[in-house]
Image: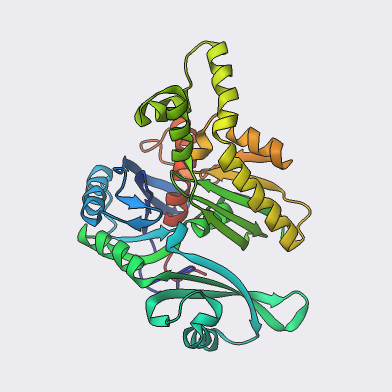
Length: 359
């Protein structure tokens, strides 16, 4: 069931269902003779506490929200791909002696505790992908391992199935962004980019080289922390602070400037954690040049976030564009709306790009 690059065969086109802690989104991509087109995109808010740190706390509420989302969208595709992140999933790169895929799966299954923090393979769903030969040892290969506790995957599966849908691929948020990046951006084999998804409660970081993941990290800090800091500082309700976070305190330039200056303080914990992650990646992997950082998620929409991170890191930083090479059906999204919601749609669009049997 757990699949990071599609090991199934059969019907190709799926709907992407992005289940976040503050909202859920549905995206549908159509393959046409004119290229790929966004056929549907819908989103609805999710009540606080339904999902906490990637774990479903109120499955019935999630099922009801998924049903409402499907009703609103008019989507007819019942087979879907969704994703997990945060504490729900573990991603690890390891070096092993060269072997075939069948032998690799058997090795990981028999010695799971040696490579992953689990004592029993029966406790987890895992997948692995051979990345290629080790750059300094021809007898070894690099392998990407992904694992999640079966109970967590089963919780997602049951909630989705209860809504009348068929989950055929469980992906990972970071890899959904990687799929999106591969589809929309041009890059060379040695180009390194860092994809950062700032969600409501979890931030995902995926460093890709030549379009392929070489380092991932999730941490439980996101846009909600900024909202709460604003609420505490200004004496606002959480809902009021959420609106203020994006729109600012007022329409005059002085109010906007004061709030932008304040945002530097409010966003510092997230920016600092991203900076530490990037520094660790660069020192560990010996990467001198990072071509760009692409931000997605609701946190990417915080005014000045991209500029602040870019200045701190000294790396070109911008908000990701899920529709750089994907055409939007204007009946679904006009150009202005597509730009505005792009960061929020990124994971869902990445999921919708997945096809059964792809690698």
